[in-house]
Image: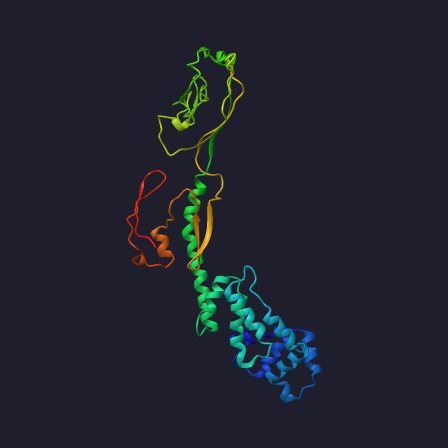
Length: 339
């Protein structure tokens, strides 16, 4: 109440006398405040001095300060989750007012600010800064917060693009081998009694190696062209980027009666991307968070030139490289240099 009253008087009634200001203080404070004022039994001179009246109210309302406890609260105060650097600094300044630090107040506020911030990498940077003051510490923290926000805004379009094109698994086929009677039911009346027919062949319709007449793609619909009797991975109508995974178990064939026993084949004929972003990791480079894509099959680590510039690094410091880099689609990737 006192703080608001002083600001109100300073803004609108600063030119008025102390008697007028005291009258406004008591009127706005209500009957209770007026009763307390009368209990002070101030003389006419004291009762007309605003500073004396405010001091009397402070002595009445404010408990006696326990310096030991106030300093304990100050020294153990840490930055809370979601609390900005400015809010944390303001909280420390307010806590220090009741600690009687004297001329050491600014230095102690600076020290507790550095020790109490949540960002440990930023904390280390502040500790290495010479002649660090309260204002310079706050400026460094503000700059880091601004850069982090800019990096998030830069990375948002890439993340939105990945979410706009959700990874899918086009098809999973559970195929069981068929005996000779099943093959006849679907119209395949080829004779398997000939030993030559049972020889393994490399099939252009499924890309597997199997006995003649036992193609798992027979009767299946291609996920690319929607035609039958071949898988998407060998489709001739659309040679696009296509990842395939085939898990096969060897087939067993009886030599005595030439019948085919049950054989399981799990075929993932078309896979676009992984269903989650498990391949993304965030590492700290030059004290800044950088999102990376992990590829265990890559033979080198690469970084875009724009990312290099965002980290504040000078491309002129790179070493020239004659290494030829190609993507998994066999496209040439231009190389600026290496480090």
